[in-house]
Image (cartoon, rainbow, N blue to C red):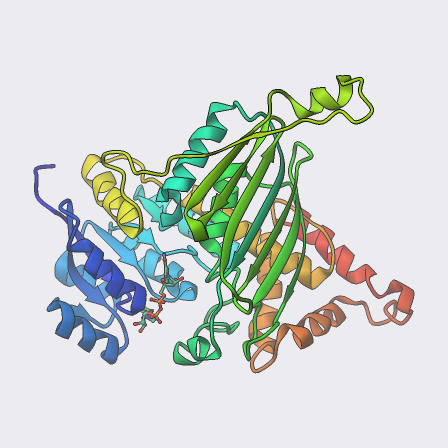
Length: 412
Ligand SMILES: NC(=O)c1ccc[n+]([C@@H]2O[C@H](COP(=O)([O-])OP(=O)(O)OC[C@H]3O[C@@H](n4cnc5c(N)ncnc54)[C@H](O)[C@@H]3O)[C@@H](O)[C@H]2O)c1
C-alpha cells in the first residue's frame, strides 16, 4: 500500500468513541472517515466536535464510506452484531474491550473473522504500559524461573452517578456483567498476558455497594497448570484506588505498582525450591535484592490507546496480524465469565469454560436480574439448578451447584 492513510470507520460515538476520534488526530497511518451511532444525541456531538459524516448504523457507514477497517466502541453486548456487519462487508475489525460480554459470542466473532479472512483486533492498551512491557521482557527472559504465585488487586471507585448517567452499565440486559466485563478487563488481560491461563478458578462475586444488578466486587482464587496459585480482587466500591500486580517466581518477584508508576524487581541469589531442599540451617533465610526497574520509555515506545489504534492501521497497511488478536483477547473474557460462573455455582470451575452452561446462566441473568442484585439472583439461580425432589435436605443444598460447575468445565 502507498503512503495513503488507512480509512477507518468508528462504530459507537460515545465517551470512548470520542476519545478515539481525538487519538486518531495523532495517527499518521490512518483516519476516521465516518461514525455510526443509533443515538441522535451522540451523532450531533460528533458532528459538532469533529465535523465528520455520521450514520445511524454500521451498515450505512460502511456502504457510504468504504473503510478498510472499523473500530467498535459501542456497548459490549452489541460488539458481535457490529463486528458481523463489518465482516459481511469485507471490513477488518478492531473491537473495544471486552470483545463481547460472553465467551460464546467471542468464539462466534473469531470464527466469522476467520471465515471472511479478515483481521480481528482487540483493545488492550495496558499491554503498552511501560511497566507491563518491562515485566513481560523480564518474565520472558526466564531468569526469575517458574511462576509460583500471582496476586492482583484492582480497585477503582465508581459512584452511583456513574451507573445512573450511563444506564446500560451494571445491567444484565444491556451490559451482561459488572466490574468483570467493564472496569477490570485490562487488569485481567494483563494477568493472563503475563502469567498465562489458569487451569481452574474458585470465585465469589457480589453486588456490594451500588444499586446495580451485576457484580461491583469480584474475587477469585486461581490454580495454574504448574501448581502455581493466584488471588484476584476487583472492585468499583472501594477506595482509595489501587492497581497492583505481584508475580512471585522461584528466583524472585515482580511488583507492578501502577498507582506510583513503579516496577519493583526482587531477585534471589538462587532457586527458592532448591534452597528449601538443600539448606542445612534451622533458620536459613533467602534474602532478595530489590531494585526499581527503569520505566523511561525507549525511543518509539508509546502508551495508551494510541498503541493499539496505530497498530491496527499498520496491521491493515502491512497485511499482518495485529498486536492483540481475537484469540488472544478472548482469554481474559473467558476468565471473567468463569469467575461469574464459579460464584453462582459456589464451586471451582475448570477451563475451558462450558459455553452452553455459561449462555444459560447469562440468559437466566437477563430473564431474572432486572431491578435485582446478585444477593438475590445467585440463590435464585442455585434453586433453579436444583432437582425439586432431591433438593429438600440442607446437607444436599450445595450439590446441584457443584454439579453445575462440573458441567461448566466439561460442556463446550
Ligand atoms: N479501552 C478503554 O480504556 C475503554 C474505556 C471506556 C470504555 N471502553 C469500552 O468502550 C465501549 C463503549 O463504552 P463507552 O464508555 O464509550 O459507552 P458510552 O455509553 O459512552 O458510548 C456508547 C455509544 O455507543 C452507542 N451505541 C449503542 N448501541 C449501538 C449500536 N448498536 N451500534 C453503534 N453504536 C451504538 C451509544 O449510542 C453511545 O453513543 C464499551 O465496550 C467499553 O467497555 C473502553
